[in-house]
Amino acid sequence: MARVSDALPDFFVLGVAKSGTTSLHHYLRQHPALYLPYVKELHFFDGDDERFASGLDRYLQYFSDAGPRLVGEATPSYFRHVEVAAERMRQLYDTDPPRFLLLLRDPVERAYSHYLHNVSEGREPLSFEAALRTEQGNPEERWEEWKGYFADGVYADTLVRWFDTFPEERFRILLSAELKQDTDAALRNVFRFLGVDPDVEVDTDAQLNRTGEQQSRVLGTLLSSLPSGLRTLAERWTPEPARLWVEQFVRRRSTGDASDRPSLDPALERELRARYAPHVRRLEALIDRDLSAWLPRSNQRSAEPEDPSA
Image 1 (cartoon, one colour):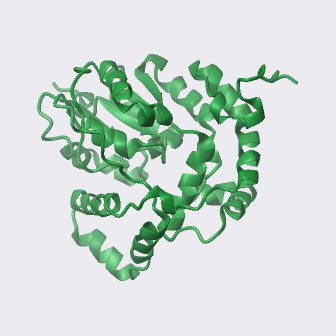
Image 2 (cartoon, helix red, strand yellow; image 1 turned 180 degrees about the vertical axis):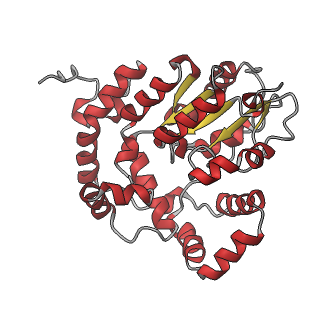
């Protein structure tokens, strides 16, 4: 009898949000030995209880055309929803866990990109500084609306919980800067980890999902201002795969040039780097990587690192 895990994805692009997962998903889909559906962010493992309990057959339909290829799925929010997603995966995969690809971005850059994304979609009326203060003052409310700008960049706390559920060797961790600066080398690394031909040529010229402030704001306003009745009818009468496909098709092609984005205030950047510093140092030890570029400028590796016990 076939096991449920045999039909499930072999690997996941686990996260993190705003780190380049859309580009990585696009590159992986070009490898002839890999199958990822066009639709990204299926939210099966971090959906509500009813969706998870009753939606397995519908979820597996996304992979029905894979044939003998390795199957992957990309939902970046799985990473931060570790308490739900990891446990559900553990139950379904049992003793044969999947592999995980995790992209980590400079947390200050990630937080600001996250903020601009929400602004562009009409979901954030506050300045970045005010939004960060609001997150600190009422973190649970901001989390529910996916506005954990700072919290989503505290990677070590979340990664430890994933490592508590699945063996560390099932994870391949990349830095977003590596994927951007030497895409071919980063992809060869990923392909070797997945056990497929690392020398397959991939078109890496496309710039996907870059939040252009002015162009994206127009689309965001249109999407967020649809009458609730129309949104309800669309959800009721449009099959989920088609609805997700159309939404992602539109969003991927509405991205603007990054040059029209406002720059982050230097004083606020310094404040954020100082807040993130202990978390970055903990992550360095956890994954054995040099993350000094993420630290406050005065603490980068030109000098001896601070004693964490001081």
